[in-house]
Image 1 (cartoon, rainbow, N blue to C red):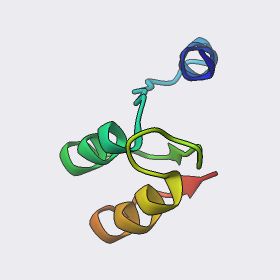
Image 2: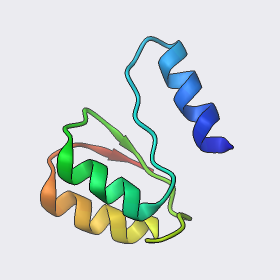
Image 3: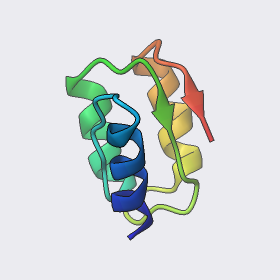
Image 4: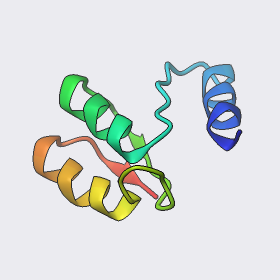
Length: 66
């Protein structure tokens, strides 16, 4: 999947990466973790990426990149 490829590429570049497979899972990760960068796909199952972006910006100061 694209998610797996992104995680592999980011980790190969030497960064720690946490993948999420749905908007709902992404929100759970944002609520429980601290991230230096959030790379967000808008077409997510469970919760649309635009909703994750809107809610995520309310609960974290992590920068988002779409």
